Length: 431
Image 1: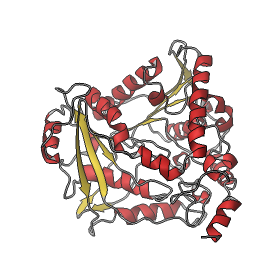
Image 2: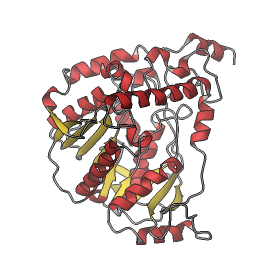
Image 3: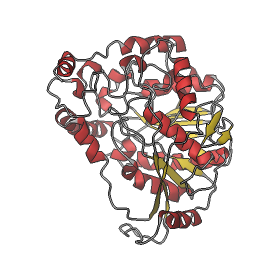
């Protein structure tokens, strides 16, 4: 395929879209979820060591997170209030002597594997990798290849946490897991094999920072920020309120109108996970919560944030990413925004051999290392053209035409488009 030709890229995206829709429309959510959580044997040039952190009675992180959610819940929408749960985590590091298909060394305990992983880590840097999956699919095993590549390129170690998944565990269960995983780096609780990682050595991926005074497993922690956040195809808005949701549909993998989402259709096969009990209109949370700034961080205040690096394709969520970039830049945050012409959401996973992916990954690694060195990164926004990968500058002030107040209004209005289908209510009444 000619990755420099936007028409070729559009055709490739259509094939991916057709395959996605076939699965999304015909396979129950729980079946899709189970397939994405299948555990595969560890192999290749990676060390993987697992540990589990049990909940603690000397921990106010859940209460503080719920307090932050309540403070921003100005519409008073009812939402699920998850319990603390065990955190299943794993460290990934580069294993230099292993080949592509070398099996994991037998007979080593997780502690012994961590010591070998740590010995091969040349940087004090720790990367918290919060992976994708539409908040419904995937576990750490799906991202070991990416985490291992990142560990090798940065000479650092990478932490992933098995976040609870919707629809069984709606917002804010996954956010709580990610927040506590970050705290696990700062103050390792019993069961964790690592030493405390200072926040300036942490690069946080795909999580909006929480600014709170925290007690975690008996440790008193100040609200320290990570060195930076490097976000690939960020989902900054779940309401799908902005024009790019329709404008860029032909370039993306998931071009389905809100009222036609596959899991809301009458012929979508039900399962134990979906429809939810009681029924709701969105897999992740109650529809009214979709505009909450901790669900859709495009609505958040980014004052005082660590530096941000944002990269995406020409995807449906681009307008939201632009709003986030403009808002953070205006609030004094260092922001780098890259948009790759004619590329779909998560193009770096579906087009692994594309020149665009090679550039993106090189820039990603370079940025993470710059964050770790506390190097000041000047704010810049650019479109990366497909033909020659030339960066065409964009002006932060004109990225989007709306004020932040208008953005919030658009999002809240859009939440009203999400309705519980009649057949879901009927199914519930028959249970």
